[in-house]
Length: 115
Image (cartoon, rainbow, N blue to C red; front, side, top):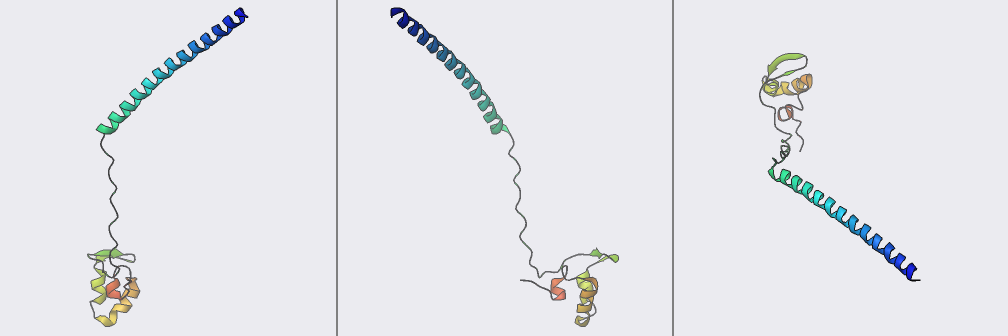
């Protein structure tokens, strides 16, 4: 029985020693992880922040005519089509807007304003 007890004590001591070795290994691994995290933190502190994405421009009122000159398919001559549509008087505006489909570019001139 004394031999049996001695054997059990030896077995327990062996397990405790094994556990202590595992704890030492875990402590070493934790030290490595702490070092890696510190390196990452230092990189983040010294790196340039990512550019901030700008917010889109507010929607333009749907009742403002386009400015400047531009070409239209079928007529490569750049001009201010909104001015051209009303050039010969209000009686021709409707037909000119329809002929060149100017409603999106010239909603005010063509009377096609959306709220």
